[in-house]
Image: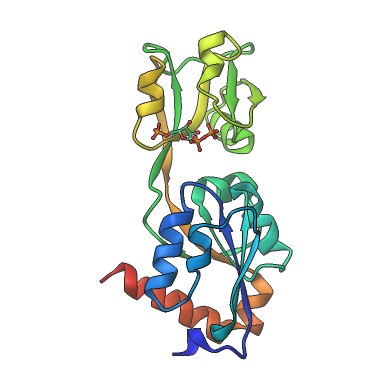
Length: 215
Ligand code: PRP
C-alpha cells in the first residue's frame, strides 16, 4: 500500500486533547502505527519507522502553524482552529468526528444584542470579529484562553463565542446558545509544497482514511 511506503517520510501534527483519541484510532485502522500516542506522557515526538511516519503532538491552535511552515506535512485539527488561524493550507478531508457548533452563547434572552460597549469573550477573536463585522454589528472582543463561559457569569463580557459540543458546559452555568455561527469538525490539512513533493503518499493516506470513514 502506497501510504505505508517507508522511503517517503511524512510528519503528521496531531492536536492534543479532544480530537487525539479518535485521530489515533483512525490512523491505526489504516495500518499506521501510532499506538504510543495513546499514552504519550510528556513525550512530544513519536515514530512509525517501519512505515515512514513521524508524529508530533501539539496544542490545537499550533497545528496550522507547524503545517504552514512545512515542519509537518499533514495536520489533523478542528475546523474552528483552521477558521481562526486562516493559513494557506490544503484542507483535504472532513473526518466527521469532533463535531461541534460554533455559537454565540449567553444568558437567556440575549439574542441579537450588540452595541459599542457590547463585549464578546472568546478563544476565537478572528472568527468572532468576522461574524459580527459581516452583519455590521459593532462589538468589543475580549480574548481568553479557556473556560470562556466564565465571562458572562462574572460580568467580564455580555456573551461568548465558543464551540458547543454536548451543551453541558453552557447548561451547568445557566447559559444557552443565542446564535449559531456554523458547524465544525476535525479536518486533515496538508502543506502546499508537501502535496507536490510527497503527493503520492499523502493522497494515498487521505484516500485510505476516507475509505475507512465510509466503511
Ligand atoms: C470546550 C469549549 C467549551 C466546552 C464545550 O472547552 O470551549 O468550554 O468545551 O463542550 P460541551 O458543550 O460538551 O460542554 P475545552 O473543554 O476544550 O476547554 P477550555 O475551556 O479550557 O478551552
